[in-house]
Length: 79
Image (cartoon, rainbow, N blue to C red):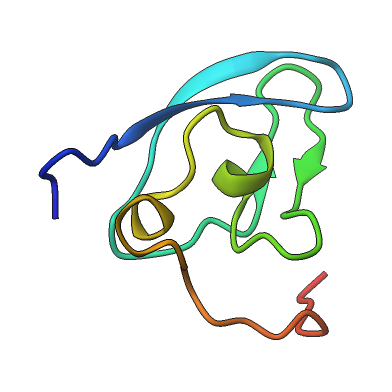
């Protein structure tokens, strides 16, 4: 799966603007991310599968490869 797939993304917090370079997993979606700058808990925007697709410079590996990611219901919130 790593052929041409970027496994690192810069994620930027919309609350404070802090950016961090993070490794992206190839076998899971990251639904929540705590900003290392201000502590805000980031969640995917509606229609996005993970925080990397919403706030990262590079979308998650499944989106890079197949153009789609985890199948989740927009109403399935755990917060």
